[in-house]
Image (cartoon, rainbow, N blue to C red; front, side):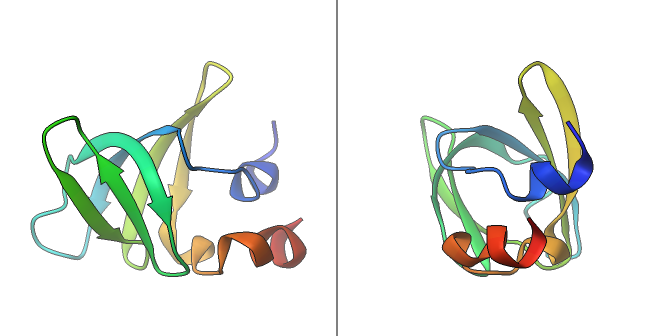
Length: 87
């Protein structure tokens, strides 16, 4: 799977982990993507729900058994438009 295909993936329902973030308090947050907006992921870890900004954040996402590191700055499109822009 090439990197650009990963950026066009549907993330809702996927397990995701914050690798690092320029925003305080989000490092090492992990859980399932519950919702996605143009600028954020809503991640649920079974206890809490956190809204994590995409900009300034690197994420780790496992797709089909492969770990992928994603630059949140490249994800700041509305989900339905991301495939048009990056696909």
